[in-house]
Amino acid sequence: MSHKIQTLSGYFHEYQKSVTNPEAFWARIAESFHWKKQWDKTLEWNFEEPDVKWFVNGKLNITENIFERHLYTKGDTPAIIWEPNGPNEANRIVTYRELYEMTNQFCNALEAQGIQKGDRVIIYMPMVPEAAVAMLACARIGAIHSVVFAGFSSSSLADRINDCEAKMVLTSDGNFRGAKQIPVKAVVDEAVENTPSIEKVIVLKRTGEEVVMKEGRDVWWHDAIQGQSSEYTAKEMDSEDLLFILYTSGSTGKPKGVVHTTGGYMVYSEYSFSNVFQYSQGDVYWCTADIGWITGHSYIVYGPLLAGATTLMFEGVPTFPHAGRFWEIVDKYKVNQFYTAPTAIRALQVYGLEPIAPYSLDSLKVIGSVGEPINEEAWHWYHDHIGKGNCPLVDTWWQTETGGIMISALAGITPNKPAHASLPLPGIQPVIVDAEGNELKGNNVEGNLCIKFPWPSMLRTTYGDHEKCKNVYFSAYKNMYFTGDGAKRDHDGYLRILGRVDDVINVSGHRMGTAEVENAINEHPKVVESAVVGYPHDVKGQGIYAYVICDMEGRTEESLKQEIKDTVRKIIGPIAKPDMVQIVPGLPKTRSGKIMRRILRKVASKDISNLGDTSTLLNPEVVDQIVEGAGLK
Ligand code: WT7
Image 1 (cartoon, protein in one colour):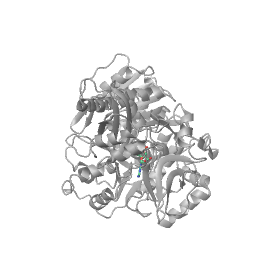
Image 2 (cartoon, rainbow, N blue to C red; image 1 turned 180 degrees about the vertical axis):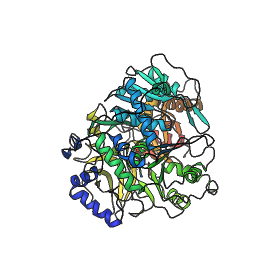
Image 3 (spheres, rainbow, N blue to C red; image 1 turned 90 degrees about the vertical axis):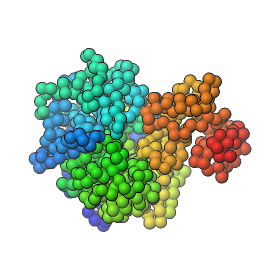
């Protein structure tokens, strides 16, 4: 792409331009895409409401920028290389033309099943090419997709369906995941019992396991596409029409539907992909995320496909059938860019170097990290043993809400420094602020991370609740988007992300609101009250530690702890299951009744050296009891 930055001085030059005249900067990038009608105005914004519009009145379809734009030159180029969970099953290589035809056929199927522009469609699917087809077909007909990670429970799925009043669920009979087989259709069946808006469920045959198909509601994928044409003219969308909703946890008890719109998301996902990974035509790029997360949206599907790249999609897990699976796949397809999460690196680090030894990994040019701060030990292991010391390691900071990578080295162009996300992409204006919202300029400063100017792929609202969007992101500091993260600008001017400063914990790179876990725990009939905090965990980054006040009658401590863990697993899903449950006689509270989480965090991280002044607490004696109960005394 013409807007790929190629030198360090080019980076500074572009950055300067993007700050001096952001609108001209973005207009130039947007011009390289295909618009059915050019926009009237590049940007309209205020952060008070908030109200942000990019490429105002521009008309387009994002999938025309994937297909029609690339078909002449890349029809026979692999768009998706799919590697199955089981290494003995055949892989699939889907070219741009094939993906185009599959998408068109599914567009026709969706319409035949009653989906129209503006309808919401839930995608609850395994990592197979059809999942990408599902997303692209929604985008092509103008339906709004909301992908739900297929590890979420039926009640989490039902909550999301109900929040956006979706008409349809796309799913599979079952999913393969390592040695396990997960009966996803059964989860969907349970969910849709409580979702009045759902009219149809389309089911892809994946595992071949037996499922119940409800007459009039459930349709097999292969039947739905049967006889459908593989031609379809993309619907014309407004630049600000909704492209997708993606639910994410926050400090409030209920996940929010982050809304992304068409034009801005398209421009930014491709721009950031091309620049951060320095993708060159013909490279094979692999991101190990799941499409259920924003990383899968922006950097498995949209960013790479908009760039005409070959994107590898892996259905399985890093340790199945052996701990060298990732590296085996890198060699098998000669992967050039590899993008994963620190938690995966730490999990593999445990197996030592032996699983890596059989593989050369010499195709790798760039390695990347996302999801949480990467600790220095994992950084060096990844850099030295996977990158063999000669691949730039891009530590990419961003969020579901930002839609794309915001702060990161550009591979091989800007310097990378262990555990530092480093520099903002041109077009991104991060600031570090103190508690009063004053911008802390210069180096060697630490505070809360905000963004003071809009960027094309920023969230526009939280679905159905604009007030919430305003309160959560735009009220803490005037005229700034607040990220919820702490950050430091070091003596060299590089940014280091310090982690969340709100009641959100980051478990294996997945965001979990403590309030959401507490709500789930409180569903257990024996639970009186609970408080959840994060604590340092060797593999997950942060683990979930739950302090629970219970009515113990008829239970042993062990049985109750297990029941509490199972309750959370059932209500939210396995990713939210507490690692530690401590039954406590009370929770430390201030005189106004607020739980003193600072104390609970210290105990959970086994650091009781400085618990601070507890004498002003309503119930100071409980602190000792908790310390003792944690086995620290
Ligand atoms: C939170 C966003 C972005 C896709 C995956 C997670 C943390 C993300 C980094 C990084 C330090 C990071 C932040 C952020 N985070 N990347 N490179 N260094 N922290 O998306 O679920 O929306 O979570 O993940 O705390 O706020 P998400």
